Amino acid sequence: MKKIFTSMLFMVLLLSLAACDSKQTISQSTPTSNDEEQSKQQTEKEQNASLEIVNSGSTVWVDSINSVWVNSAAIYKNTGDVAVEIGETQMNFKAKDDSIMGTSSMIYAVPTVVQPGETAIVGEGTVLDGETTTDNFLETTYNFNFEPTDADSNLMEVSNVKGVQGEYDYSVTGMVKNPTNIKQDDVRIAAILYDASDKVIGALTGSVDVGLAPNGDAGFDLSYPSLPENIGTKVKNIEVKSYGFTW
Image (cartoon, rainbow, N blue to C red; front, side, top):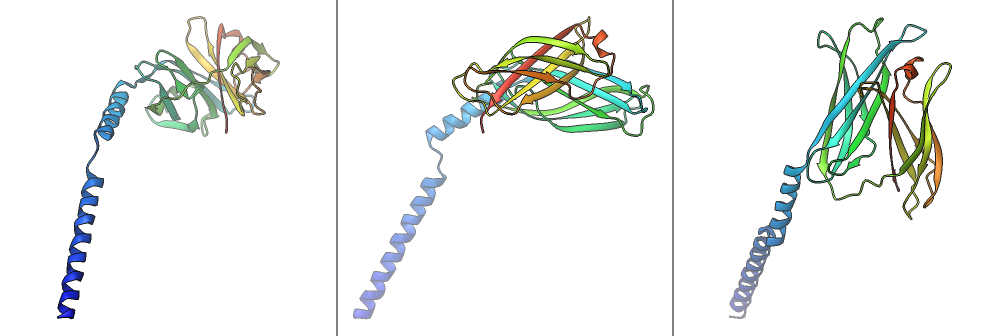
C-alpha cells in the first residue's frame, strides 16, 4: 500500500511539473503588447529611411610611370524622415564595354550617421591595373547599405578651408574643432572637390588620429587618395565634413 501511495505521489509531481513547464513555454512564446509596439516602430523607421546619391564624379589620369589612376567621390543625402547609419561602401570602376576595371571596398562615409536632409561624403582612389589609357573608363558605381538609427552625427566644426596646389600634388588644409564637452578619440575628415559647374571631380580624406579634447581644435592636411598634378586648375569649390567618435 505504501508503494502504491508513493508511486501515485510521484506521478502527481511529474504532472504538476509538466503543466508548469507548458505554461512557462506558452508565456515565453507569446509576444507582449510592448514587443509588438517596438516591432511596429522599427518597421516604420525602416520604411521611412532613405539615402540617395545626389552628386558623384571621377577623375582619371595617367601618371609619370604610365599607371592609370582613378579618384572617385559621391555625396550621399538622407532623403528620408529618420536618421540613418551608413555601412561600408564598395566602388565599382566600369569600362565602356560594361566590364569591371577594378573595385575598392571597405570605404566609410564622413559622417557615418546622417540626419534627415543632411549629406555625407565618400571618396577613394586606386590604380586600374592592366590599363594603359584612360579611354576605356566609363563611370564609377556605388554599392552601399544603411539602416535607421537614433544616434547623433557628432559633427565637428570646420574652418579656414583652403586648396593647396603643390609642385607634384594637391591637398586641402584647414582647422577642425570639437564643439562638445567630450574628448573625441578619433576625428575623421573628408573634402569633396567641385568644378565650375558644381560637378564632383574627386575627394580627399584623412583624420586627426590623436583625437581632440573638449572644445579643442587642430589643423588638418588632406592629400589622400592621389589626384593628378593639375587638378588645382579645375577645382572651384571645396566642401569639408568631419565627425568624431570615442572608443
